Image 1 (cartoon, rainbow, N blue to C red):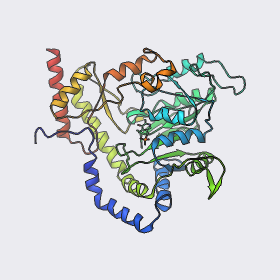
Image 2: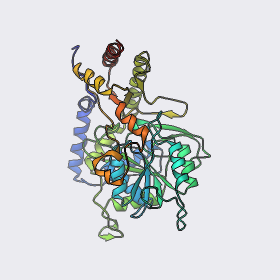
Image 3: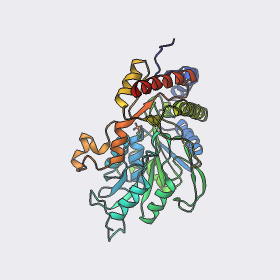
Length: 405
Ligand SMILES: *Cc1c(COP(=O)(O)O)cnc(C)c1O
């Protein structure tokens, strides 16, 4: 068993464990013949809103739709610009484009890997003000900026107090991309935050609205595609309910042209079962992250592990990412020893072929670019054992020893 491969992500074990329950739930859905919307979806929406500590949750077909619908619901339309980071999964930006808006990038913070409040502040300071809306005009697009999308990457919430304060000062709406941060917590001071409420806040409850994905590999994953919007704003929830369902508030009466963006009952039923295990899975991830940090701490400054519990952050470790200048070599070394790794993400969005036309240059976002060339995601999932982590650490130690020599 010594050289049994260690997967990057183990989706088999939790489904083996929950198989009977999942099959029973799907039998129930089949017998009800309520396949799209209905009591399973409403039940999941209630339970997930409660989990996120928000008033509303509206379930949709996937996380990319969730980003787009959330932006549309807070009023983003064609002719607007939206700020986000280039170090994220492309769906964040697809959601912005598909809402009709232009993307403006700001760099990330080198310690948290989420939106840099310093870069955001200096970016906003450099913008002219649109005389009509009073909003800053995007430096790249020349369009008035309406919203900000901080991404809670790897399971860690962005610096929401400073971001919230800037958003208030510049009249911007905040939509959290919470696709990697189900249940992550952040201690808000209150005065600066968007709703002025102090205390520990869960991902999805801090901005005006938030987007979640339940893609199978996320911390809470469906057995297929699924997503959701959370918000405390009744109008946002109402709008998303309408736009996900062909723009109808009442059957065959279409207020706006919408989408087919609903969640199906099977996925909702699966998600309700899995949601009951999410707290346990998150604690297991936290334990695994602590073990990694202990095991890797002696390995010198060459290997830096990212994200940690602090007085203001309780991350949920969607990923456990380390940084090293010898990323390729370390990845290859681990692969040879049967240890799978991931890259999240190898090419920053402003350097992707599809966005080259936007005119950003290499060097536009130095932190993002450096990080993209140095990161490596180690195996991380709730069932990861101490023995498996010891093997990962031994492999990394052998690599660093060989590198030093
Ligand atoms: C997964 C993900 C999404 C999109 O989710 P899908 O359900 O795959 O459409 C959006 N943003 C981030 C940061 C993600 O990781």
